[in-house]
Image (cartoon, rainbow, N blue to C red; front, side, top):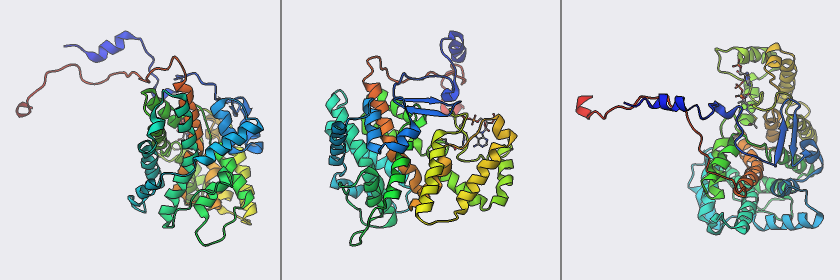
Length: 402
Ligand code: ACO
């Protein structure tokens, strides 16, 4: 009888790295993170500069093509994306097939995957032109699909894209406008939405991006790959953390209760963690969290919300955690999700939509990483190894004899 486990162990030919804490799965020229210094660069440009001066489609262009666009390139890119914002009318029927109380991320997993059933031409990944069209379609249609998921949940009619608005303003329009009523997008809120999209656009080889790359490595079509990324993003340790962070802040309820929750987070016998705190790569303040905190203040100021108890709790919690031995020693700082929930809530979104908005923004990162992988001549199917710990080889026993 062969001891298969021993056989594997004896080869010594591969590394065992659960959670890929120290294994690079690819080369990439898109995004750089220095987690100790709290630096995030897209194609060399610091995230704070992009968030302050850039617009979302400019950042999309940068991630996809490696350079900031010229005016002519930007106009052309905007025009192309705008051209693809509508979804096939038949797709609206999908939404009505779901329960109204379905989580919108569940709806997103299904509907985005189904894009491949409508845009067959873009499933030919060997053709660079079709890869480009698929990328455009995904970036352009994600806000439309996300807004439709929201409208269905609200029980309101779908709003068609308004293509004279920019990406973020059009998204707010599709979510919050209703037929027969005047709706004017507030430019301060639209700018905040745009900044939130920019902050979430890419973050190198995180779990959902690695999922997209792994799915794509088999030659699966881009729509199916992005659907896989959406499924992964949904988890509370990843994109679902903004929803979880807001729920946690609401549960804490008052600044006086913060020390109790801090103690719980430190207790190894309690599974509770401070949601929106800690990061696999950042061992310093997540640069996106700073911009998000500022955006939260801007949005609340614009809406005339003088005191948001959740923001007060968040800021006090940050203050306490950053001076606590446990958090200092483990280098746990607020991540992007800590303040994003407060901002999104103020913008009018229910918590179940938070991760959907993350997915809308991250689509460009996913597709840029997918494109980079497909265009790499050395690309292979992703196939991690394992350390087998199961039974050695044994003979089948008929059921009557077990
Ligand atoms: N609260 C309390 N303790 C924490 C927290 C936290 N939020 N995060 C990590 N720790 C502790 C762990 O218990 C562990 O302690 P130990 O060394 O005594 O066992 C240590 O810090 C290291 O944590 P790991 O889970 O090993 O770190 P990892 O890199 O695997 O996890 C993660 C990173 C998943 C983000 C983690 O910090 C976490 O669960 N945070 C809360 C969820 C969250 O905010 N996720 C959003 C991430 S950002 C994004 O996806 C956009």
